[in-house]
Image (cartoon, rainbow, N blue to C red; front, side, top):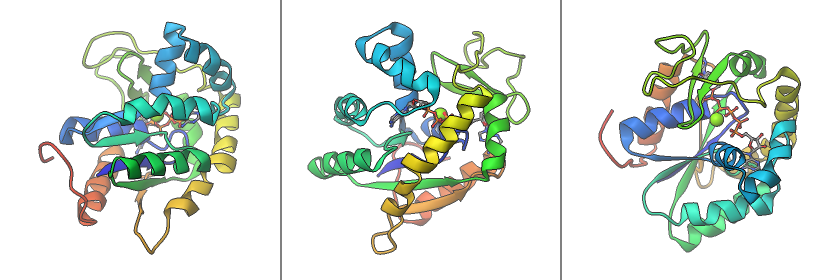
Length: 222
Ligand code: AP5
Ligand code: MG
């Protein structure tokens, strides 16, 4: 079963994807991380995407869908972190999954928008791995240093207050309509978690909701 993590910037999608990846052998596919790597390396995709990302806008659908096709071709269960983000991307994903006879469930990270700015302005990231920390809610063992590699942490350029405001508005207009797309009681394609809870509580809810719905996971138990 493939998991689609749906929720606004700062909801905790990346944080939980990394935890499930470690515990259950899922593979996290973060479109944001893939794009940031392309920007850092100056690839043609990175050059095209950079301006959109810096202003907090979405990268155009055709670029994202073209980027995702080969990634989704690989075997194994994945966590889609940040994709789809528009109705057009959701249709493209459904087509791809149907062709490969793969199934998916969307997990909505339900969170009070008031909490998001503090989460994003206090976030520090280990850019090469995408691991994230928070000065208050999830500090690293040593200030500004990654727990695993000892390398320095950085802040994302789009985590400035003005850009965060744009990203939250873009989420409302472009991505929130996906809730209606997936939340169809007839085929139980979406479950909700209370993403305002502490990180370990959100993980417990996620594991319970995924296994409670009869969805199997690959890899070792928690
Ligand atoms: P992306 O990298 O996906 O950013 P985002 O969606 O804005 O989401 P974030 O990564 O900011 O939030 P998150 O939910 O992962 O939160 P996190 O776990 O880090 O996308 C960036 C850009 O790329 C987009 O703006 C767009 O331009 C482009 N892009 C990407 N995908 C695209 C697509 N499909 N189509 C078009 N464009 C695309 O947590 C945040 C902080 O909170 C951390 O510090 C963490 O430690 C803390 N935290 C997490 N959970 C909790 C908790 N439960 N309690 C307290 N603190 C918590
Ligand atoms: Mg993220």
